[in-house]
Length: 341
Image (cartoon, rainbow, N blue to C red; front, side):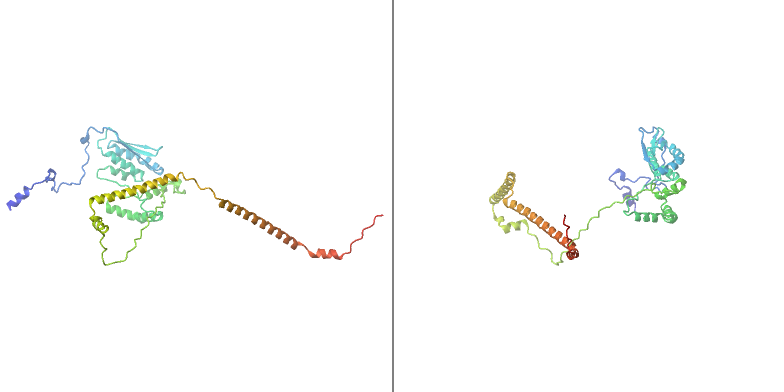
C-alpha cells in the first residue's frame, strides 16, 4: 500500500503547467468567478483616448433625453464620459484620465448599442457589471417570407408576452423583441396616435434568391457482378506490341509522332495566316438575275392589282345605275323645237 502511494506522489509530468496546483481541488474556490476590477491595479490610467459612437432612431430621441442623466451618472462611476448629439442623432462614449478599467470602454460601447435598440436604460446599465454579457441577434434575415416571419416572431412573444416572460425565467436573461418596444414608444406619443407607423417600424426587403437545381442522377441498371478490371499501362503496351520494342525504337517512334504533330500545327497556322489574304467573293451574275426577277414580279403584281381595282369600280358603277329612269325617259314624246321666224 505504501509503495502505491509513493508511485502516485512521485508521478512525473512532461511540462510545468501539468503539475497539480494546491488550489485545483479546493472546494471553497470558485474558478468561474470573475473578480471585480480594483482601481489600484491600474493607477496610471490610460495612455490613449478610446471612443465609440452609435446612431439611434428618431423615435428614441425623447426617451434618451429623459434617461441621459441616469446613463451619465452610471458611466461617471467608471470614469467614462458620454455625449448625446441630437443634431446628428448619435451617442458617443470615450475614456478620460480618471478611467482605470481598460475593458470598461467596451462595456460602455455595448451600453449605447442597447440604448439605441430600444432597451430600457435601467436594464442597459446592468451591462457595465463584469458578470453581465449581452448579444444582439438580428432575426430579420432568418426567414425569407415576411408574413411567415411576423407569425414566428409573434409565436416567440406569445399572448401578452407570456412566452417571452417564461423564457426569461428559464434562462435568467432579459430578452427584448425590438418591434414591441417601438410600438410601445409610439403609443405613448398622442401626436402619432392617428398616423401611420410604417415609417418608424423596421422594414424588411424581399429578396428573390435563386434556388439551385437539384441534379437528378440516373440510376444505372443493377448488376450483381463487379465491373471488369481496366487494362493497365503494360497491358496496353502488350496489345499494341510496343512492349517488345527496344528503347531506341521507342524514342524514334516518339520523335516521329512529335514531328507529325508539329507539321499539323504549322500547316494549321499557315492556313490561318493565308485566310487573311483571300479576297471576298464577288456577287455572281445569277444573284443579279434573281434580283431583276424579283423586281419584275413586283411590277406584275402591282399591274394585276390595278386591273382588279378598275374592274371593281366598273362593277359598282353598273350596280348603281337605275334602269327605270331610262325606261321612263324613252316613253315620253320628244318636244318639238320652235322654229325661229
